[in-house]
Image 1 (cartoon, rainbow, N blue to C red):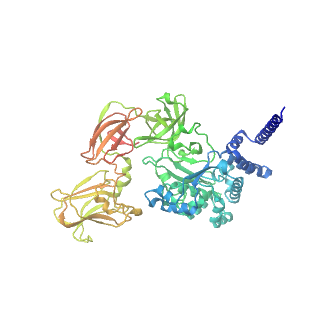
Image 2: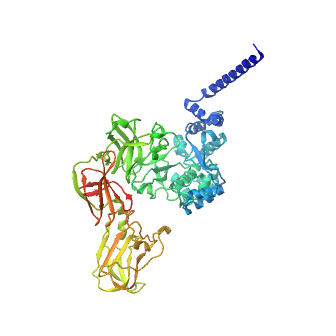
Image 3: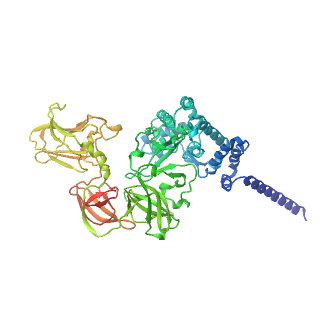
Length: 639
């Protein structure tokens, strides 16, 4: 054997020995841990050393057995969690936040402050053992020191106090900062026999009130306290940090999609000493007070969870967009309003590729999946869903959505009433959205006045709106023959002068023009000032700051007002308006099928439609589609 061959053999022996030692070391290392934990170590790569430090730290002393279990909970459920943030000084990020919505180009703001692209760092590969140990120590500290801690089980503690993060915010030493920021309150909680709910109210009252802004990257506790800008998501996140940092068991609840809007909403819930969850809007309203999460009807409500719930076991491509975090949420719909389980027969088994189907809710002309269910024996089973709403069961395979059932309405008993198109019938459609009702009452009791003095000290009443008007144009023949220079609409108390369009006509039925006059300003400093009622746009309206409020015209000279025409404030102009073009559709198996276009010559459209069909109408003029409806006893119904 040559010298070269001897070196080759020796090198091979050394490498094989090293590999054997490494394999034996890993075998011994992993043998003491569960298969689940071992799998986490493999995903963590070289950073598993940091995770093992935590487990070893709490394995030395039997008194730390509960902390060891807490560490195992955090680590086993860590896969998939990460930070997303701009790798720039916080001062630059804060400045960008402040200017974000004052610019029409939020991306341009990012470039101006040279924030670059968001950085994504997986917790498994970057988190340190020291950070986890510190988090566990402080979480146990507040759990043990708060008077209500004895009423919180270890399982609840793990989900509602222990987690070191909430969303995808940058890692932050937020627990120390919470204790420092609320030191006075924390001391008072330790000294008194205070309830969880009272403590929650006291902390919530100290949180900054937010200015509404959008498109922010996820922010941690420090950033949220400093900026106090964002949406309900940011308000909910800050509340969770502050509450959990003080040992108050608070969760983040949300609905993925409102019934009549293409957005969802987030809020919070706190667990009292009896284990009952009470909802509230963090940084805005306290437990027991009204907030949108309980005043608006919802189809599904979820609670964010730290632990993997294994709700849907499939690849991400088979999960709809609004449910991408499906395995880290808990369905709590039954805690919010009337709900029922759904058991729907499938009509299309060909696309049942995963054993799952999704519950979709309609908005405009799309079906948005907002719930999940399993398929057993040709039936789809969905957990609690809001009742008196329309749904459709769908499959979702590789990004493609397909119908799995006929559309249906879920009633309070849990019965599904399916909409299968039948014979044609003639119907009249005059109301296209139930949401209009939320504003119409604000004109009841309003009056129209005329005067010849600009201060209306000589005002005469031309007309009073006695009942709640419908969501359409109203013509009022005044019978007036006198001449006046000024005319105005005066809102009833709490009506905020909500009127969308005002028009006045003379004795020749010609539209009168003039200078807009009225109460200055608008609610929440919006653009909806008194001049908007004369722009002819059904989407704009006057939204006064307070009462008394009015809007009207200075006609320049005295004129006779023979007719008043007005349109109440509606929800996004959702009525039938003369001159607007409409197109009606019905759901036919797997698509919306057109029933033709019409130009409205009144507030009523007449169509031939299939019986028992789910309908939807589009305002072509405004390029707007609203909620689907059915015809029930000759009337439109949205439930």
